Image 1 (cartoon, rainbow, N blue to C red):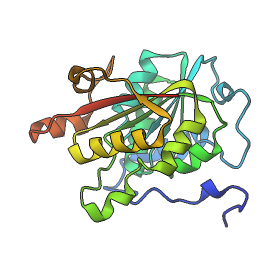
Image 2 (image 1 turned 90 degrees about the vertical axis):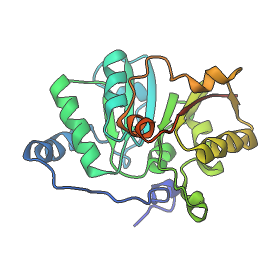
Image 3 (image 1 turned 120 degrees about the horizontal axis):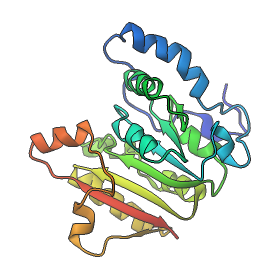
Length: 233
């Protein structure tokens, strides 16, 4: 039963399937052993400061929502060992893939959650996160499903609450309607400044960008991507 004092615990923003093909033995073992070790415990109060989530000192916290195969999350964690990363992904196969890489590389700066990201956003303390990445989220291309898109006024308000002053929200997509949707929603929210000054600013990948398999698929199918950066105001 959901705690009435914690409304964010109800799953409200995940509509996709949770599992695909059967896991390999090693992936299943990693999921059984490593997931409980790294999974956020939302029934406990978050540590103060939030950096206490990690066994090593970290100077900032980033949240990646829907990390897919984990390529970007792992790249950033290796690139910035003194940054703490929280990755949220409900899809079992993707989580298993990430945990295998975490074990292979011995990464200590990643924590994860395998359910709805809104639960994590409602659990996090205010002004506790330096950056939120939402990269190639499900575009829900049919107009009747647009209400399922993760970018919404309710979730932007969640972003705004947990981001530190001047914190960043990074969004990438190859779907024009979702790019325009995000620009419009951030404008209407009023708490985010889009940092682009010219076309090249949103056509150029983010600094240190490793690429993702979703991006590669989009390019093979003839679609270009947009990379949007917003700052909390």
